[in-house]
Structures are given as structure tokens and as C-alpha cells.
Image 1 (tube, one colour):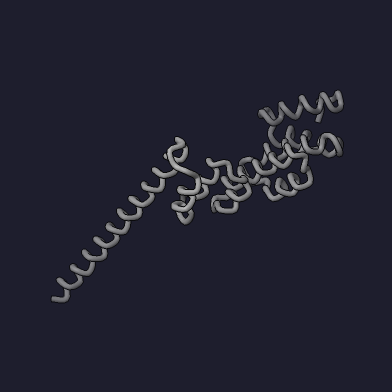
Image 2 (cartoon, one colour):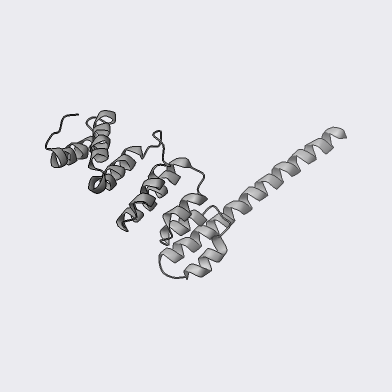
Length: 168
């Protein structure tokens, strides 16, 4: 008798779990469809935002709708992806000639981040006008840390233009 009750309890738990999983997948599919319809221009931003606000798709929706990358970064848990949005935000600040703010954002990205080479490259570009010595040091560091890479080649070209010298 206890064995039957235990079997029924386990079956009920498994069934409940499967129902919950199916329900969650269906809800996520509905949200993904809304974002897709927004991207196609078939529904308004306000309508989608209201319905995706508390879902895993909210950060993605904000990114595709042109929201400030800093806001998107604040919603992300994955540090690598977050770093991309922080870097994008810094680049936008740089484009607006808000160099100190851009540098502050870039300084929050650590050397173990996969986008660190591009962060260094942007830092060097920011420093070129006001602190060329800092830019030169960063370009040399890029050559040293990432020899033979795209970033090393760009650094070599920038060093040639800034100093006439491509040596480390």
C-alpha cells in the first residue's frame, strides 16, 4: 500500500514537473513571437515591452529596439555578453565626445574578458588626442599580449602613424 502511494506521488511529481516545463516553454515561445513581430514592424514597442518586461527576452528586446546598451548590460547575468554591451555603450559615449565617461565604462571590463583586446583598442583611440603617450603604451601592450592578431596589426599601424616607430 505504501509502495503504491509512493509510486503515485512520484508519478504526480514527474507529471507536474513536465506540465510546468511545457507551460514555461509555451510562454517563452509566445514572448519570442512578440519580439519577432516587433522586429518586423507589426506591433508597437510599448505593446511588446509591456508583455516581455519580466521574461528572459527583455534584455534581447531592449537590444534590438535600440535601447541604451548600459541598460541592456544591467539586465544581463553573463559577464561576457554584459561586457560587449558595456563596450558598445562606451563607444557611443566616445562618439558623443564624452571620453571620460567612456573610459570609466571601459575600465570596468577586466583582462579576462574575451573582448578585452577591443576594449584596449578603444581606450587607445580615446587617448590618442589628449594623452598620446598613454595611447602608445596601450598599442605596445596590445602587440605584446596578442602578437600576430588583428589587434596587434592595428596597433602597429597606429604606432607607425603616431611615432614613426613600430618596435615594441
